[in-house]
Image (cartoon, rainbow, N blue to C red; front, top):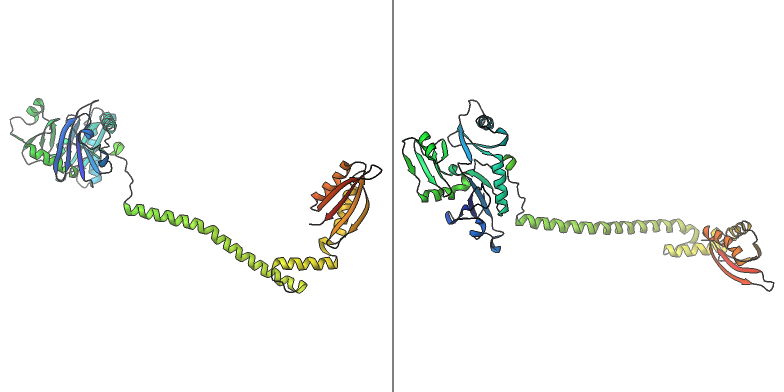
Length: 375
C-alpha cells in the first residue's frame, strides 16, 4: 500500500461500538485511542486531509475468526495447495454456507487459512463504511505478531489479549490457555513490540479477509501526467472536430471551382470566353433571347397559358403579346375574378413566374392583365 499514513482499527462486531484505533505515520504510532468515531478522534476528517492518501487496516479479533495451518500435499502448486486448504477449513466448520475463508502460504511453506462468518464480515464492513472507513485489508490481529520457535507469546491489543505461537492464534481465555498451552511458559509481548507490529501491519496483510465476495472495489484514479494527457487529447479531439467541416468546405470549394472551370470550357465554343459562370449565364441568355430559344421562347410560356385556360371553365384569353426577355403578356376575362384563380394557380404550380392585375370593364366583366415567364 503506497499511502503516506496508515490507520488501523479493530473490526467492529456491534452497533455504536467504541473502536480501538492507531494512526501510524513516519514509521511510528503517532496517535491512538478508543472512540465511537475513530476518524474524527484521529483528526482525519479535517478538510486539509481529505485528499491525503491514507490506508486502512482492520484487525479481526481472534474471538471472531479462526486461523488454521494445513500441511500441503506433495506435487501441488501453490494455487492447488490454497484451494485444498480452503476445502479443509470448510470440512472443520459446522456452518459452511455462512463461512468466508482467506488462505495464504506463509514464509515456512505452510498454508494458513482464516475463517469468519459471512454475516460478521458483511455487518462489520457496513458499520465501518457508516463511519467513513472503507478498509483496504482485514487481517487477523494475531497475524501481525511474528511467531518465534517453541515460544508462546501473549499480545495485548487493548480490545483483546491473544496468544501467538508458530501455528496458533487464539484468544487468551483461561480455558483455551489451559488446554492448548498448559503449564508452558508464555512470554508477554512489550507494548513497544505491539506498536512495531502495528507499524509493520501494511506488510502483514497477505492473509486478507477483504477478498473474494468481500474484496474492495478497485478505485480508478489518474496521475497528474495522465490528467494532462487526457486534457491534451480532449483539446486535440476538439480541434479535429472543428477541422473536419473546414476541410470539407475547402474540398467543396475546390470541387465547385473545378466544376465552374469545366462548365466555362464547355460553354466557350457557344458563347465565347467568359470570366465567370454568372457572366456565361448572362451571355447564354442573351443569345437565347436573340435566337428565341430555350425557356424564353414564346411557345414555352404561351402553351402553358393556353393549357391552363382550357382547363378552367368560364375563362378566356382576349389578347396576348410577347417580349424578347421571354415574358408573355395576356389579358384574361371571366364573369368573376375568382373564376380566373384556378388558371393562375395552375401556372404557378407548373413553375412559371406570373403577375396578375385584376380590373373591371365598363360592362362589368372581370378582367386581368397577366404576365407569364418561364423559370
